[in-house]
Image 1 (cartoon, one colour):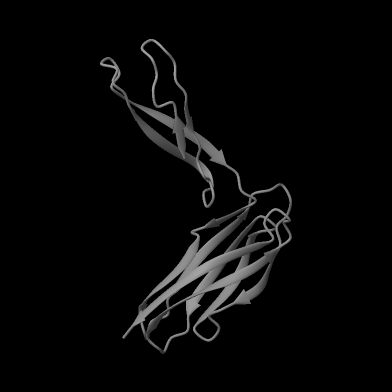
Image 2: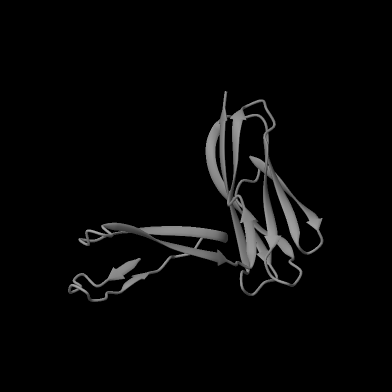
Length: 154
């Protein structure tokens, strides 16, 4: 989002305000805005915003994708990491692909790091989407939802 003074008198000053919606981002981010002026010495310049977005829970990647052939076993993984200084607990809540995909949660580092493995159940072809919803013990993020995209061909 940007707002700025549209007209600045010669020799005057103006204000440019930039804001970034960090929803869905975590870690280091960098955003730029190009400014065009009628100043012959500085006709174009770039403003850079850098930020470190801290989130209570990191989910990487944000979804699982299972693509392959009908008779193949396809597995993908999603890593979940605690972003706060307290142990994280995960509890399965809702899973919408029962009978088509299985999952298991492995705790890699106690209270800090988990891997969720998704595996197709071989047999039928088709495309479908669903999700795994996990309850957490974090008030800052009480649920984690992992989207799952599946495309199985003959």
